[in-house]
Length: 400
Image 1 (cartoon, one colour):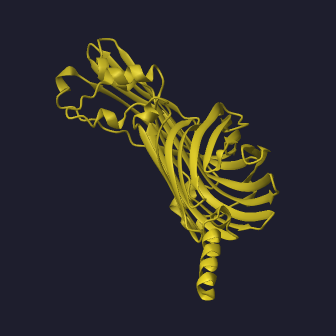
Image 2 (cartoon, helix red, strand yellow):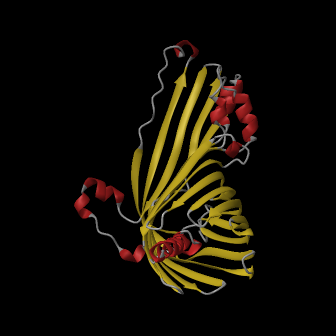
Image 3 (tube, one colour):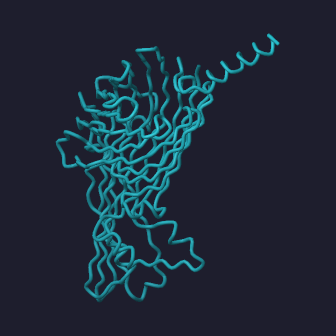
């Protein structure tokens, strides 16, 4: 009888520990690999092509854009981190790659496809690429109190490549003698290393660490009403901009005239790229500045979390050219949390100038945790609900 009672008590204690929130919520040591990615546009959606008899309505696309550019956006942010979590203190390090690409076209091409051209009509199609690739590393230091948490994340970053300040495009003229197609585009590519020398002789690679940039992320949270209402905030601000010492101008130039007699036999020739090494540039650049504040409401303790947030962001903050862009951000979401072992979440947010409608799932088995999510995205709010872009993330954590 005593053995049976001891077995029941031991099993009960083990189950209590195993299925407690703290057991699944806190790992002493962990390493984490995360891979978020997304690709989207603000015009075409999956719904347009999932019909039995798909019809490409260019007039509808022109009306949907309403004079705005046609954007194709890609983001990738793989990251690896190691963290040590003590009862009132945490420290860790992470490193990753932050890729942002936005290739924007004016709506001239869609207007041409929608309405055609009359004699003496002129269509201008501008191309505006914004591409940034950052390599970064940062330390994570946190202070944990009963109802109050703080963290700071000083980081260094290297802007591997940045494409901005580009000009030109394609001009199409419909004349009595034929159609003139004029291409005149220049893309400015900045780098922290001499790309031309490396491509011709990789052994010449010599990195100058004085070009590194520095920024600082920080934040905190506290319970305004214990176990019911929590306030939190986080931000990242530039401290020292990185310096990109090399510039390459890539140009596409051509002029073609198509007579009406040659129209049927015409073959489009894509102009060859011409590269010009401008040399020293001293182009200063920062990672985006962000600042967000959140309110978390827990109507059912930790089982349900309702979150609302708002803030601002600045793309290319404190730049001397005209590439800086200020924008507001928001977050709305809910999370169902079953003793930190299973979590389900739904959210809507505007971040990095992209609307994201996302669903997430977490399976936490203490030693191993898998966090994954899928989203629909677009720079247009309406299109973000229609499948104009898709994204996802996978986070794998392991520790004890």
